[in-house]
Length: 229
Length: 227
Image (cartoon, rainbow over all chains, first blue to last red; front, top):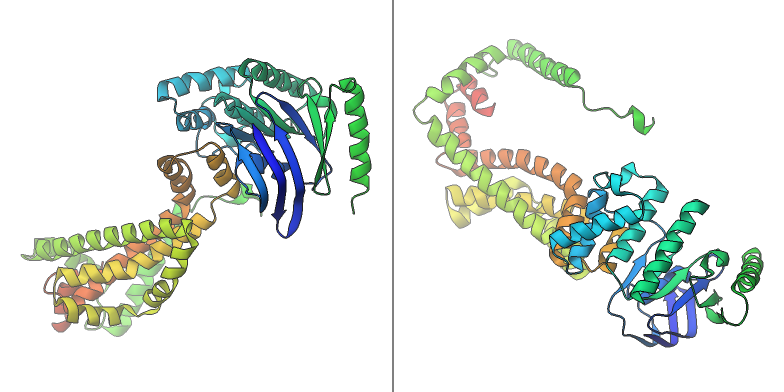
């Protein structure tokens, strides 16, 4: 469980989160929406332990939170397969198991023939697939996704969302997912939170039809984006 | 100029550069005379005969050992301190004054001091090399550490890389380019420092042999040992 009480987060002199209360139960899946610059990525970094809140009570009982970044962030001097094997070994897998698991995940994301390639030989979308495979392969109990599907074409986006959904259902991991497209999170998350002006507003996907909710949130986001200076 | 226009160093032009140096040397030698400057051919003859001299192996061996020790220990010390200072701003601040002091002090001053502390011999020569070479390696290592991709730093933190994994898969590859350049500079500087220290205060080595050749006006021998 993630339990935040009266969290204040400031970055570069700017208040990102102000007196925020947020709770995420084990196995729960939440979508994070908000206009550009609202602090969505910072919120994920807070959950990943990369950032620390200046004030408030922050507790987490998750064993391993893994953040899949907006950019792939692959090690450019390691081959594609090694970019999966090394984090697996860091997570405690022996080298042989790490190699097998890495190969399985590359197969699942359709990149097994690129196992020996270098990251700079991949397109942006392919690199993002590798990054996503890396995040899922280490089997976190809290998965943090920072717009991981944004660089992908619609067909591939749907494929990877399906892979994420299947994995989440099998692993029962919790999910915090940032997206600019509420529609793509329909069926993936149980509730949405809207981050704006340092505050969080929750929308439960059980309250109304997910598609209707997603459209309403999309309209809200558009309004917020156009009102930005 | 685009990235596609950057080509590897041309060996043909490198060869031309070397030929121009030899030509310039020949012209100068003809102007100055054999006492002040041996010609390239005279130097080549002396170099050919050098390995057959009785004490060549002693002097060459002594210099090579001192260069190896001086460059090796100096680079290792600079790298280790640079790695730690790159991670810790307090250590970086603590070493800043010492770094400036060592880099600003003329090597010949350090030679004189080292002769007072260690007397003549290998210890003095190696000490000078380590003291003069470590700061350069340190600076390159620190700069390299501070320029490591912040995104990759976050990634290794998220995936809980251990210290050894961070060193092997992040820091060493990221530092390869600046360290490679620093090592090349340190090796060349190490040769110059060792020879200088031997000229001023050793009883063996290439520098000692240079000093002997100078005192007997053997300019061909002087240039042979230099080459």
